[in-house]
Amino acid sequence: MYIRNICLLAPFLLSLATTPTLAQQMTREEKVRADRAKVEAEGFWIYNDLDKAYRIAEETGKPLLVVLRCIPCEECVKLDDELVDTDPVLRPLLDQFVCVRIVGTNGLDLDTFQFDTDQSFAVFMLNADKTIYGRFGTRSHRTEWLGDVSLEGMARALEGALQLHEDYPNNREKLQAKRGKPLEFSSPEKYPIHKDKYTDQLNYSGDVVKSCIHCHQIGDARRDYYWSGNEVIPEDLMYPYPHPKSIGLVLDPKKRAQVLEVVPGSPASQSGIQPGDDILAMANQPLLSIADVQWVLNQTSPQGGEISLELKRENQSQTATLKLPAGWRQADDISWRVSSWGIRRMTTGGMVLTPLSPEEKSALGIDTKMALKVKSAGKFGPHAAARQAGFLPDDVLISLAGNNQLEREQDWFWFVLNRFRAGDEVAVELLRAGRKQSLKLPIQE
Image (tube, rainbow, N blue to C red; front, side, top):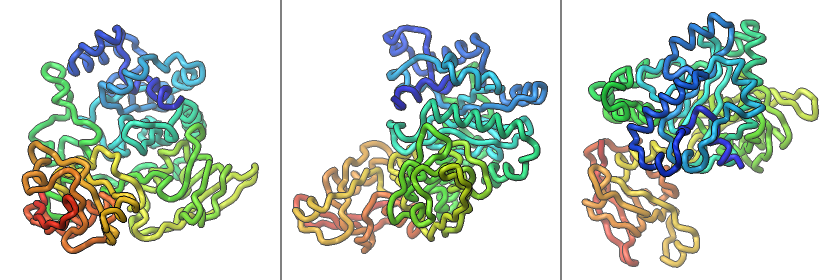
């Protein structure tokens, strides 16, 4: 079962050498320190020291395997606490890499390590000169990993990285696009929102947990940089690393990039991709996993574009072109993302919104596209702003600033972020107990 097995991807996930009862009694601080002591004692993985890993990779000629993972991972401890280091397929592959584990992003080189920051872990396979062979780690749900990752898929990715490493530097040109353009700042603690709170190091002499910059905080900091600067948040930051499903492409998590299903009428379908196809390369980049597909999609303009594909179909080479229309990113589901929490603070005053079904709309006599029910309204801090303005759970929102076409919560997000700024108050029409009301919603930092 993938949801069980992915939690064995050691050492991405916390594994405690204690009984479950004792582990549950440990504080978060104790778990982090126990995790470090355990990994360092075992000696297989380099702990939080990229410079050391680069040196060893240069000396040995091995590629690097870098795992970024926040700790402790409570859900994975509940599911399983075994280690995959002993897996008969993965361990021989891991032995061929210099393996390094990064548990906090303080000081992380963001020119090299660019990834979907809403994930619990991200894997990079790269050369000692920082040329990236590929990525692994995909997510499309808050807790379920089924359909996104598997141990088999990771093994295929590691095998592919070793093949690329063997051919390096002959393939250097094809690999250059696996690195992105520099971000706004070169490391997470340099973003304005983090500058006075964090340093480039974890504080093991004090409160290590509070000193850590989590992965999702990088995305939060990037969005805040634009929003607090009175700029529109870029569309690729609102809809980052689109899942292949958003363009109608369902891939096999046990393979590198093998097609399981193509949704009729989708961009993937119109490109001619067929179930059973192996996608060998996109935009001339070799693919090692679904995460590599997402990387190519993430580098494609929100305004659309064409992506060249190299396919293998029934042992025959094929080429195709994937055409993406303007606004294609907005088909992706972002509601599961941790980042949606901060966006709700800005745009909904802390409300969580869910669309009514056609039957529910009909029962209430709603004839507009927009019918967003307030699933919950925050009670504390900035997330209580909507409740303080009079909004309540079970209200049905039917118009925002005169717009009654917003069918999803993320449509609301994008509408607000493009048209309003912090400090504005926006008129909202709603139904409460069958009666129409109007309220003002504050837009926040």
